[in-house]
Length: 454
View 1 (cartoon, one colour):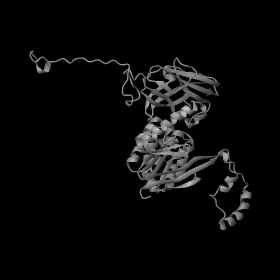
View 2 (view 1 turned 120 degrees about the horizontal axis):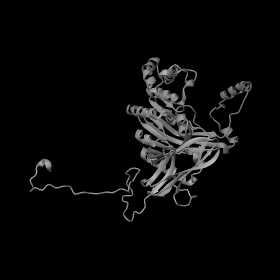
View 3 (view 1 turned 135 degrees about the horizontal axis):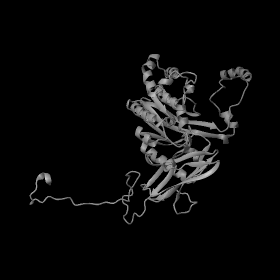
View 4 (view 1 turned 120 degrees about the vertical axis):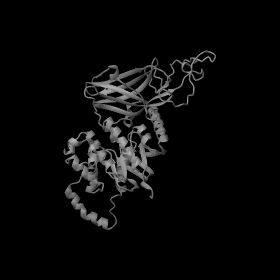
């Protein structure tokens, strides 16, 4: 591990669905101490060996959150990790952060490691922001003088000056994230691990965090970054891991990893026919309510079979975005969806509020549709972020991320109306335009003219 900051070998993590740890009275545990001590002395007591218990357990309730994952991270490298919900990204980071132990395999970390995984992770709720800064620095192995040297930078970056001496249990989720990231970024760990937790912050703070991560990368610190923001992954990382159902399916160039991720999402969309059974892999539950849920999403051709849902359209073809919503309450809501290229760059955004259309939801299931006319999307596969929120207070009810929405094909290539079908000139391909050319005025050399008039 001469130049290796993190090495992971055959890492696996197994869980059991619906299985709670057995309950024992304290007196029963005390009674077992002598026999456990004797067993340990005989070399029989093996706390990490669970094979006996597993042999008698119902294996049908077991699942592997991670399975046989191996990779290295070089010192100073910024490594991206992508994958749909449930792919094992957070489990991997929790193991590397030593929050949970692996079931199989091993890993090694060289250097001081700081992680920002979940809102409030590592904070003591009864301590103030000031006290938690010193506590976090101490956990990282820093001296009080080192923490004091970076203290002002942390407070200013986190924008919590007025709440510095308030217990963090009274902080909002955004304040938690700002303080957590500021501590992790400014206390200069050799290795920084950041999960999708930054999605909780506002847009301005997200931009500031990403700028800081870019600065960290340029200073030679090692970073592992998990995000659904594919353009950010592409911008910050050169190498990326792609996880699917707990397995590492690709490790290499970031652009290639993103392409494989998008192709997998498109295939999953076709296989599941856009139904709610597999929506969990696209749903982002953080900071979302549960009273209103998106249960089905699809694209319907205008003038075609009104029951047929398909992601495949011809270039410039009108379509209807169809969304089925199940609500437990009566509320006023707004619905929106973005259209983004396979690399994650957004092409356009459609919000119901922009058309002065408010969704009046009642308890039960209802279908909302939006007709899109003549959007000249260039051929290719497109992802979408779909969200529904309360109109009055802006509370988010449900969000789908990286949902495979559209697959645009060229039409009439033979008649010459469209050319170069394989070019990648952006997401919009305007064809309804008029070109003209005028002959430039020429100076007659025999006429009496001056240079300035020519």
